[in-house]
Amino acid sequence: MTAGLRVYSAEQVHAALPWPQLVTALERAFAAPAEAPLRHAHDLGGCDRLLLMPAWNAQALGVKVVTVMPGAAARGAPTVAATYLLCDRATGVPRALLDGEALTLRRTAATSALAARLMARTEAASLLVVGTGRLAPYMARAHCALRPALQRVHLWGRSAPRAQTLAQTLRDEGLPVEAAADLEDAVRAADIVSCATTATEPPVHGAWLAEGTHLDLVGGFTPQMREVDDHAVTRSRVVVDTYAGALAEAGDLLGPLARGAIGRAQIVAELAELVRGERAGRTRAAEITLFKSVGSALEDLAAAELVVSTT
Image (cartoon, rainbow, N blue to C red; front, side, top):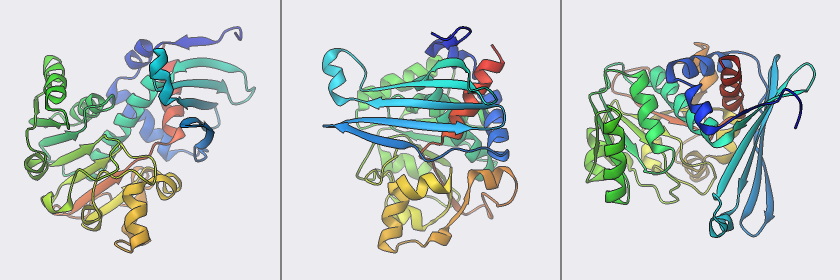
């Protein structure tokens, strides 16, 4: 191992990335010049895949290596594994090796919370998290951390017992979370709807959305994945994390675009434009807003730099 290389466990990564500080770091990263090419995906045969996510700025460069191995579970290993390597930009010398899953969970949730701060109504007081997977509790934590006025958080999943267990875990942390029995009712009552699923058939329908709702879609990252139907998209003012990523991978947008349900002009901004004040995330209180994220390596780099700089 390279001399001086610092290694960070999942626990250390989580501890080094408090929500307010991480959101500030992400906001600065989106506002500053940086390079983050679209992720490179390689088919390893069967269902196995290798994903590489590089990014660099004037100070640092890094790459996240992700393996997706469905057969790994039978060998007692996780299906998805991720590691992040952070290097010095001037010399290329490796500085740190970080747990990639922890980094991804934190930066994904924090990016959505940042987008909601720029797009959701300031008086938004109720949140619905759709999904009960690894990312779901982090979505609730990040949104609550940035929006102390949230009075009610509902959590819905296809497995009611799992949703109830996760809701109890979050209540034990002091968050006002309850499991939702009916998804349609929960969507109709929510000011912010955050979807963190791997659905290929949309669980959330546009007809259920009240005026002024903010939609936060983070689960889908391939053209085949859908978390909302076409009607939800046509009713919304759409912002993406990056144009390049969303227009290549976001099924929630690619499907409606291909069918002519929306035009390219309905995707009004990417997150960097909102951060820099070049575009508005919301133009009126009754507007339905939609933030679609497929994940950017820029977020990984910003989070990794924060870990190393504060520990």
